[in-house]
Length: 312
Image (cartoon, rainbow, N blue to C red; front, side, top):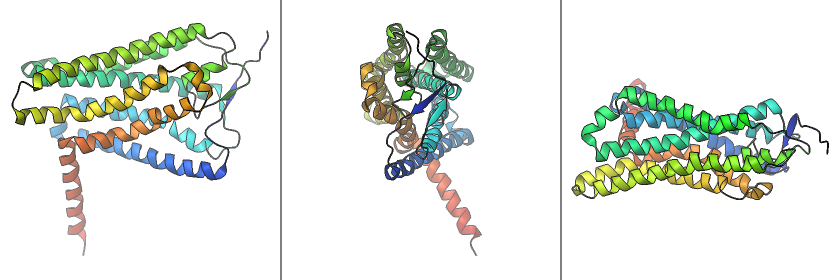
């Protein structure tokens, strides 16, 4: 059976109602501004504050950069499409968004596992921490994150290109892998198997490593006195919250039946995963992390002092 290959696609988005789209535009614009300002603030504070020049905050800086890239690869296009009547996206633009999302998602999965390992070394093996997490090792681990994410997420997709055919309607607000693959011209059983294996390697294995790391952390922390115990747990609560939000949503997205992506359910899960989570991460680390809160308070106090001193 001959089928025409699609060279551009129509993103169905959320609604064709102008009133609804205006409300969604304002909502997503606010979320995106929170994401950009929050993550840029976190990165600026870490880079400019000597007290935060530690491996834990180095990885947090990388996390903010990844969240910023992930959100920027999705939201600006979504905002433009809310006031577009056609919502056309070319094959090239769709591919760029597709592979960028894969790379950033994979990097964040691995990064959160690495941050859990960092906390394990700091709490369970504090005497070895300066050696195991020295700066040269941190830089290598950060580079390895990007390389592994590219090899595990992007390369399989590049090696298994799928022809996409008409009808070219994508029931989504972006070129998300599970929505795009439903436009495949031929049987996608092999692609589904590859995605399942990739999800297992890139999601379940890092998640299991996080569970193991925190199991050792809990055992170690319970053996110390209450004062040090509270301090040790305080350095982990922000990370645990981010892990639950990010991994929990990701598992609902990637381990749910593929058929759900013909409905709106997958669209709204992806909305939380790709747009809301990146905006929540800087807020979570600002509210739950004592060091970050102190730096922010000092910064605002300094700004207020400068304003008062310059006032007539």
